[in-house]
Image (tube, rainbow, N blue to C red; front, side, top):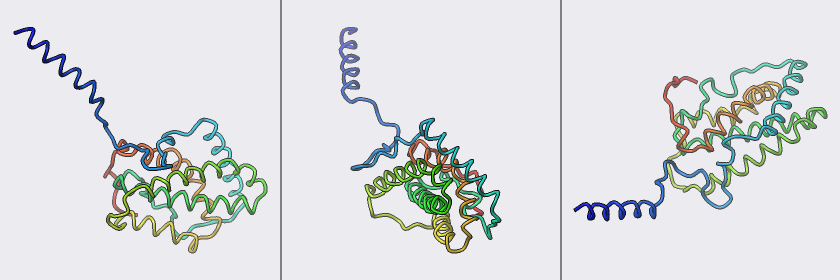
Length: 202
């Protein structure tokens, strides 16, 4: 009898070994050219270049008279509030606006052009990887609505409604939220748990 149980246990162990581990989340690398998972954390060198850029931008803003008619990024901007499938689109809009504003700042200020050079290249690379992942996703699905629709509309209309100074200040103060919280959330896929602790208000 004992020998029979040993045979059964050995068979089960071998079966599990062949089957391999059960995945605990959806992969963050899907489709040709999609590798957003590598941005779960930026290197210390990359973060240092972004900190240097942010400090230079903040110094530049002290010399400018700027104000915003309304916040460019909604007060409850947090990608964890969105469905997992919605987050890449929100991050794409966030990156697109950030790049547009920082590129304009670099074009009009030679000192900023130097300090923004490496961060801009990094942001462009992240955006290209993100877009490859978005293109690899199934095209069929519900249209954007609710919170995501409102956020995307806000970012799309900001360049027309707000001054360059407002836009520059907004992306500067949002820069590390983008890099540390939002980018990390999308890179972690299902492991970035959804939250509903924030109010629906904008």
